[in-house]
Image 1 (cartoon, rainbow, N blue to C red):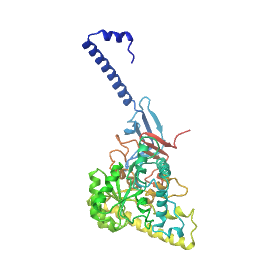
Image 2 (cartoon, rainbow, N blue to C red):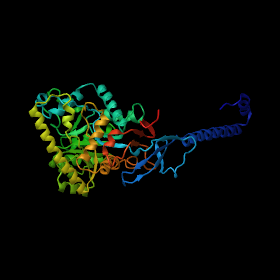
Image 3 (cartoon, rainbow, N blue to C red):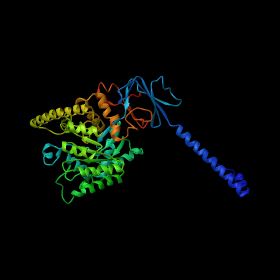
Image 4 (cartoon, rainbow, N blue to C red):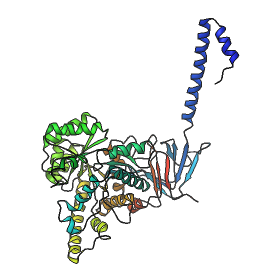
Length: 470
């Protein structure tokens, strides 16, 4: 705003009080103008209309046919039929034809900073937890910068496959996931919305053993925070809170005591953080239940009585069907030559694992316990991106006997509750963030449609649209 020199001189010739009043009035006009510009910019948020043949509401199972979703800025403004929602002036229209729209997928349990290549059997047999620990140690001792770049790549691959939100639960170095989360949030790199856990809390001896004594502490501290008594348990939570994490991840084994985990839970809740506990065996699952964890991750050997206790305490079970259906064979056979005997043993193990996991899924469904799903993906899958590997894992739940609609719920509305973000994501509803995916067919009838997501929107921005006519 320019003021002619003559006007300025006139101001100076006025009595002081008059001059001050006129200046104050001028500033008030400028302020009003600035506020008007600001409000105008806010009201001019871009509007996008997405049209599709079908819209699935995972919570109810209802399907709207045909459907229109109006997006304003990064939020969903309206959802309805074409007769209910008109096209506002200046709105962008995305026509997906007969596709099925559903909420953006949520991976409740993943590891974006690991891409473990399984070593040959002779090598893995030389180490405790040999299939996993070798790759983990390599990730820890290599350059954090290299690891961060890999994490950014895997995050982008997840997003491109329709996973718009993830909960990254450990194995990301000291600050890998918190920094990647912030970089994604500020638009520096593409990726899903992230909840970051920072370093995983463990007891000594979990994951890696027999390290060089001169280096052991330094190596462990790059990846983990050790629990050794209740005081150190609380301090571990505080260290992660200082790193501005979104959730606390604990690995429970036979060495973790209930008082130690209670200390973690109490301190985390005091910091307004949820606690996710890795617990596979029956004893560690009971420790997590007794300590009041918010979610139990994996839970492979949970008993019916423990499921009853979890339901009573409103705890979530996050299923991770990663190895169902011979996953280990799929990721190793392209690069590892197996003897006939080894191949026969592994196929027999696959059959046993499949049967056990199918029984687990059925018991969980009967129990009424709240459940969600995560890929637990940390493995290099030849021929697939990270996103493709993760969505293929979700499909395993259907193969284990879970109805298609329940599978979709486990990675949308239920997953949003696990994260504590049910007010933001997990459903296509007014007021929610505009995270949408679309597939060609009916994902309830054929859950494998989720492996072929063809449209992805996050925060109102189109990430991918294979339906577009070029």
